[in-house]
Every structure is written in C-alpha cells, then in structure tokens.
View 1 (cartoon, rainbow, N blue to C red):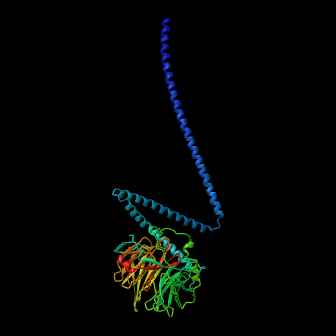
View 2 (view 1 turned 120 degrees about the vertical axis):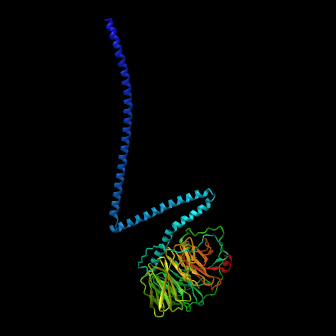
View 3 (view 1 turned 45 degrees about the vertical axis):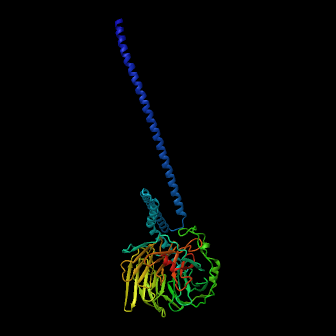
Length: 555
C-alpha cells in the first residue's frame, strides 16, 4: 500500500506537474487572447467612429446639398428671367469662369518659368537681368489677350456712341488670323531716352464732353485744328489760343474722323450715323494770348502709363473750357451728305484734287463718291472684316484701307480704265491705320503692337518693323522729316523715324500728358510753335512743340 501510494503519489505528482504546466500555458494563451481581443475591440471602436464620422459627413453633405438645391430652386422660382435666357446667362458665366481658370493656370506656369530662368541665371550673377527678360516673356505671352480686350472695349464704346441714343448697335466680335509677315529689320522700342528738352507741351484744347477719336489741321489759311468726338460733335480750335472757334452739330452719332479740303475751307467728317458730311466753315482767329508755362515734370515724378489715375473730374477737363466751348458758333447743316453705307462710317478722306472723297465703313466696304453730286462712283469691296481706317495719297490717286482682317489694301485709281488693288499681309491682329509718306512708302500700325514700313514696289516684306509694348492706334508721318508719331493704348506717344530708330517719347506724368488712351496723332509742320497734336479718351487734345533738329541730332 505504501508502495502503491508511493507509486500513486509519484504518478499523482507526475500528473500534478503536467497540470500545472498546462495551467500556465492556458494562462498565457488567455492573456494573448485578451490582448488580441482588446486590440480588435480598439480597431472596431476606431472603425466604428470613422464610419460614424463618415456617416455624419455624408449626412452633412447631403443636408448642405439639399439646402443648396432648395436655395437654387427658390432662386429659380423667384427669378423673373425666361428659362432659355437664364440658361444662356449661366452658360456665358461658365465660359468666363473657364477662361479665367485657363489664364490662372497659364500664369502659374509662367511664374514657374520665371523662377526656373532666375535659378539658371543666378549662377552667372544675372538674376536681375533674367527677371527683366522673364517679365518680357511673360508680357509677350499675355499681351495678345490684353490687346484683344482693349480692342473689344474700344469697339464696344464706338458702337454704343455711334448711333442715336434710342438705337442699339452691336459691336462685332473681334478675331485675327496668323499671317506670315516676312523677314524684316526688327527694332525694339524699350530702350530709355530722355526727350523732355526736345518735346514740350504747348497747349491744351478742352471742351468735348466725351472721348476724341480723331484730329487734323486745315490745309488752308488760317490754319485751325479740327477734332472729332464721341459726343456727336466736331470742333475747330485756334492753335495759338486754345479757344473753340466753331462746332459742327449735323451728325446724329459719334463723329469718328475729320479731314480738311486741300484748297477750300471745307471739312469732311465720318460718323456712326452711317453717313459722311461735307460742311463749310468760316472762322476768324482771336488775338494771340501769352502761353501759360507748363512746369516740366521732375525726375522723381512717377510715370502713370500703366496705373489708373484719380477721379473722373480730373479727366473731364476744366469746367470753364467746356462752358466756353458750348458758347462758340455752331453749324448744323451739311453742304453734302454721303449716304450708301449699311454700317458705321469709321473714317473718310479727300482724294487728291478734292473733287472726290473716300469713306470706310464697318459694312466691310469703302466707297468713292463724287462730292459735288453725292453720287457713288465705286464701291471697294474685298475685306473680310470691318474697316478701321482709310487714307489717300497727298498728290496721287491712291487709297489705302485698313481692316480687322489683319490686312490693308492699296487701291490705284491713277488709270481711269483699270482699278488695281494690292493686299498687304504682315500683321497678326487688327490693322488700326495705314498712311502714306511723300515717297513710295506706306506705314501701318496694328493692335499686334507693331508698326511696319512698306515699300509700294516690294510688298512681300516690310522695310522695317517697330515693336512696342502696347496696341498702336491712328498714326501719322511728318511730311518733311518722315517722323512717325505712334499713339498707344497705354497713354504713351512715341516718335520713330521710318528706318525704325526710336527718337523720343512724349513726356507723361501727373502734370502733363494724356490721362487715358491716346487715339490719334497729327503733324502740322507749318506751325513753328505747335507742330504735333494728339488726342485721346481724356476728352482733350494736346499741342506739342517738337524740336525736330535737336531730335534728329540726338539720333
């Protein structure tokens, strides 16, 4: 028994030792299972909370979306606009948003290019110059859309002021084709010049109640200045005193151009009322008055060429000048009215000799009239877009017409039996004007920010190309010195010679110069004190004294 019990005790001890080991192993497993179940519970809790958060977010999104839908539904019910018109407006706003988004993306890409260029040039110590070059590249890429916007603003304004107030006039949509311009001598206009000593402001001519589109000087004595304005009037001014001598009130729309007869005291004006008028004037010049000294701008004065100026009151001109202009004599009846266009008459000029006149219109045609009988002699068609300007040769029967189709055309009437036409293709945007020189040259300006000098005997490529930083409006060329005056959208006026060399820039500061877009320039070399005139959207014309010998000496 003791042996059995001993054996049994030994066996029991063996069995008891294995049970303790199993118990320990079970405890370890239980601990692992507890930790695993705890981690699983944590994960479930976290996932449950995330799901709850997701559900809450989805619920909030659905609630917000339902609120937006309700608000949209409420706005739709409250809107008085027809459904078709409303959908059209929403589509247009969507297009505008996409356009701005494209510009924003392009701007970001250009900024990256600027940074990359600066990093590339920083190793050579040229970071400053690289920034300027990058800015130039940025300006080059974005200037096309800027010039199109500027042209759209000008076109829309002309259309709104071309008809009588009760009528509506739709501005045409602008566009352009990229045409081959040929090889030419390209001249940059960004080099700095100091021209205050040779270009001085002489007189201001204020009195119009809206922007001035065009101006010119009479070819007969006494020499007067004529201006054509969007306020439906044309005015004649004394060059020396700045007083208004006569106001023409015969048009029912914006007066877009004015030209004087070569031998008689008659003026030819083109208007948005789809007509051109020939009217006579008789003026007596007042006694000359002392010229008010215009203080020259200081060197530290800011140039506001790309900044907006102060209030509209400053741009409207002196109230006294407007009151004096309203009291000047008026002419209301035209001697001859030229009527056959179906659109805005944007420009008109006298053919050599003064017996015929040519007009340019937004109906894509230019018309040649007999002034005495008002009969239409020829209709010059061929342009694909609206015409912007027309000009005649001073001594030959030649006409050049400019258009928004990026071309200008030369019409030859020297042979009565043959009327030839030549097409000049060299610009990539609207050709705003093309004018003759005394020789066999034509100078054209465009919204593509270039001016090109052409030889009539070789039309394939220009003799010189002048590149600027802003759209170019109606240019003029001095007869004797062949100096080109360029009016710009950015309120600047620059002078070049016909070989493309920059001569000067007219002073523009907070004390003198134009405060809005400059629309036109005109030379008057017969007047010693005031030989260049400019006009713009600041409702005034300016007379300048250009010291041409000193200007050419600086060259």
